[in-house]
Length: 145
Image (cartoon, rainbow, N blue to C red; front, side):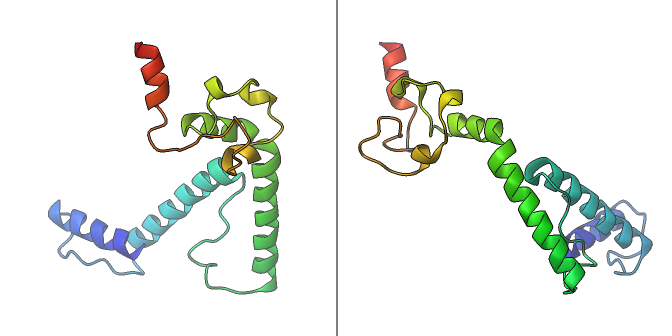
């Protein structure tokens, strides 16, 4: 938030809206900026973590039993969301990043019971990517021939 306040102060000063490039930390515009950061963080946490923001600027350094309990429940909720409900998202990551290569597998991506073998090296498995570096070369070579 400090860097953002500094940048905002310089921007407002450059536009001629303030007489100084320094913003007071307790000013209304600084409080609004922090609130915008918290709202953005909350929305990102909902999208990618499956639950709301765990900490705000006010509660980050506060260590109470209520905050610790809230953090524990947030962690459990995110773990549950990631393990049991984000299968489609994880499958798309595995395909996009080249961990799952359809031309090396007899099963479809959605037929796999888990993606453990995609991330753990097992020389006996034909499902793993031998190297994630330059994974596109072999399919491209097959396509151009």
